[in-house]
Image 1 (tube, rainbow, N blue to C red):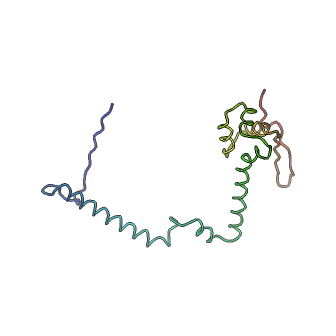
Image 2 (cartoon, one colour):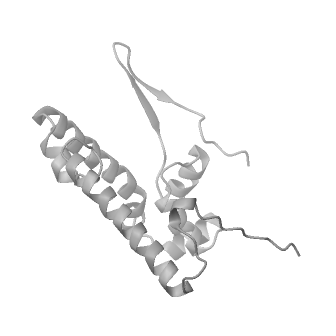
Image 3 (cartoon, rainbow, N blue to C red):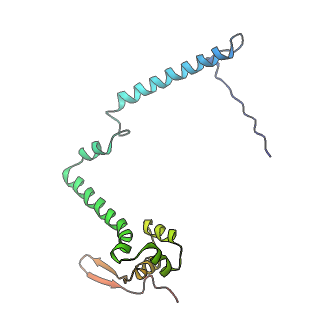
Length: 158
């Protein structure tokens, strides 16, 4: 077992503890620290209008141009739909978590974990979709080239 030595060194401007009770000495130090912190808060408050820190999301969003706010709202909705997709899949497929867990040969809490993940292996996604009774297809849209279907991705070697 290691024993740590802690050394506290007060800068000279904190004063000399000799001849003063410990309570008075530390009260004076705490008062001085409170005054410094109050000055720090006053500086922050003065600079608040110039600072990006401490702003509410609504304030930031209101300061953006309309087209940027719209693009953010659309992207947020897409992300919500993407993350809700796997959670809603078992309901749409009329399958319970227990049924999916049995089909995947995993425990029920693992089904919940898979549903909440934002980054999955394609093989895990394929197994999850197949356990719900569906099939996974991956399509890619290339600007000026059209849409192609990718095959063989996420296939499990059985």
